[in-house]
Amino acid sequence: NKIQFPKDFLWGTASSGPQSEGYKHKKNDSIWDYWYKKEPERFYNQVGPETTSNVYEQYAEDVSIMKELNLNSFRTSIQWSRLIKDFETGEVDQEAAQFYNRYIDEMIANGIEPMMNLFHFDMPYELEQKYGGFKSRHVVDLYVKFAEAAFELFGDRVKYWISFNEPVAYTKGAYWHNLIYPNEMSMQSYVQANYHILLAHSLIVSAYRKGNYSGEIGIVVDLLPPIPRSENPADVEAGRIADLFINLIFMDPCVRGEYDQDYLNILKKHDCMFHYHIEDLEAIKENTVDFIGINYYQPMRVKARDSMPNPFSPFTPEWYYEPYEMPNRRMNEYRGWEIYPKALYDIAMRVKNEYGNIKWYVSENGMGVQGEERFKNKDGFIEDDYRIDFIKEHLGWLAKAIDEGSNCFGYHLWTFVDNWSWTNAYKNRYGLVSLNLNNTERTIKKSGNWIKEAIKNNDFS
Ligand code: BGP
Image (cartoon, rainbow, N blue to C red; front, side, top):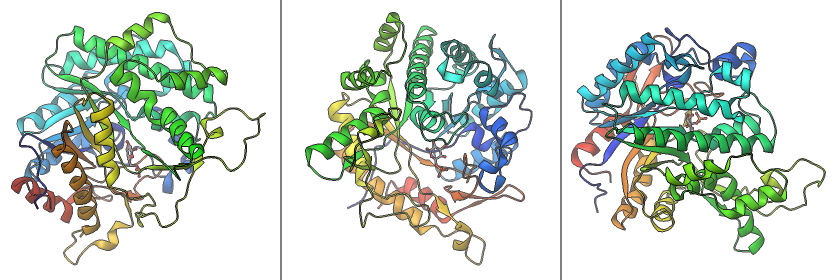
């Protein structure tokens, strides 16, 4: 039984501006640039965002390898802190505009569909410092100016736009789990920033539609399917709360036009409701997405808490659930994340059954491997059979979901060339193509050659 996909399926990879471009000609700092200067010790091996695969200069080489591997689409992001010179007025930096023009044109000329994302955790530092980033409503307006500038510059050629990548991964890191600058632990900030991101998203969907561009606009969410420890109602309820605070806070309003009432009720109960204007709700309702991108790496196993939280401690959703370390779950021994391919099928069916079978694609899925050098053969090629197996297994479940009517139009692996990762730098390698950090030389891995043949033959078995 062959694993096959529809004829016009998008086969691509995903990356982001801050993780791949490097510093050349960048005029403004993002929070990552600033944070690295301030606290380099928070970064793995003290390697920061200036150490990348230098896509700023090597984009054409990458695009030609994508073509060689039979890939036909690619997602990356336009950096707000690169494209915009003056955040208040939205004035564009011409050198940056020319760079993104060259990059996008190169993709199109080589049959690679560009999917451009506008925010990949990279809040401009100036806006963080002056206004507290997305905690501020003013920053929503400034983001809309940035998005409008991008639509105007590239909207004649880019057919797929993405407002945000994994908004919850960003806000969780910044306001809940102490992983992203400004490392402020506050549920109120988490809720407010998420609300403003949603509003910013809806407003740019509206601006895009008003501009009469001929493409589509969506958002990328990271879904962590909750798997409760048992069918016991307390565990099921734990899964439901985790789902509400991590997955549904964007899925619901972006696709259905409104929040789940249970989410709002919990916020009110804990005096954590966000500030909003009544007319925002109309904008959110009217501007639902054309498509959704779903990043899937691993599920979230949860259970009811064993003990009650201290009622005097500040509220977090973890009052209602805690992670469950299921014994014998299958782990990626090289990265530490669970491998559970069937969740991709469950996600696809959920989108079909609960979200009106909206058009969606796998915007990230992939396998990080620590110390991947050890899999180099004597000719210097990385033999990443584990990655091929990982992809095959996930595609098997995805193909089954498509056979059963799921409206999935593509699969993007994280990532193309090994790239810099937030606080992990180059510890975990994900690429189809390996990066030599000393000279930024690229070498196709075994998985790259495998996918090339699989796409050519439409056979992923
Ligand atoms: C996703 C992010 C990516 C990338 C990936 C791998 O959540 O969208 O930017 O970093 O995770 O994660 P890591 O590099 O931490 O292993």
